[in-house]
Length: 330
Image 1 (cartoon, one colour):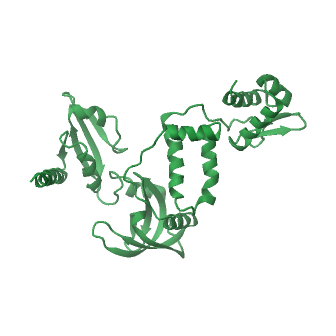
Image 2 (cartoon, helix red, strand yellow; image 1 turned 180 degrees about the vertical axis):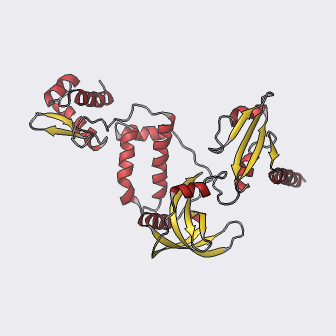
Image 3 (cartoon, rainbow, N blue to C red; image 1 turned 180 degrees about the horizontal axis):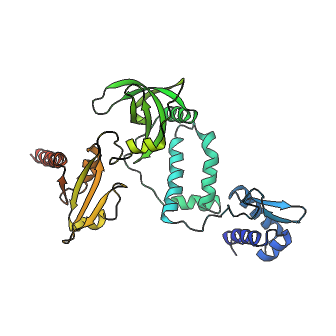
């Protein structure tokens, strides 16, 4: 019986019998006292198992704070994970590591690192091996100065307003704004701050790497409900938010349809297969920049049917690309 099997056996015995003596555990597992002590210590410290020794019962049981003492709230991680679980654990680990590039946040993040490492493997060596054998590739990552991220996160939790110096990428202009932070958003390897802008009197989304300075203010932040945040900032395609919602009507070729049909472009998308094998997809958008970028991945395999302005913008991009290629050849 290997170590992982012993962990599950210990939990099963305590769950079924409610209290199991040290000798009973030894007999069932067929291990030495030293090995059993190490296993119990590991379950408590690394797996957060609520195992307690009860002197009156002379046995080990689950703590009384866990749904009446039967341990029902605690489950050991599986010997393997589903695709979503594995991606979530590794993504969390990488996100936390990415936030700690300067070492500022180590004191806050180390307990979380230890917890995740314990969930990824029965031993530290196994966890490190898993992280070597499963790779998450993050492309086009934009680095965020740690001092701003920590300031923003602290203001968000303490419900404080912020004075921001923000540089818009569209025209490179710089402005000073007072905002009430509402939510941090991580999208495509980049962090954003959703906030109420007191200058424009509305919700805005700020790319954190475009924030040149952030200072907390003593003034209490304005509170906006999550429902209102989602209604105003989560309706459109991608990260762009605010404004009138329009619907893009796209038709993909039969060759590309099988791949696009397996993707979710937006939670509110509408789609249907056509008799000739092509795939009709409709997605809401507010600003077309990101949508045009994603359509570029399928150039030659997708038709923009509506609206007219989106079709014209897509054609302009295709023509500009062809003109650039001709210029390079010349």
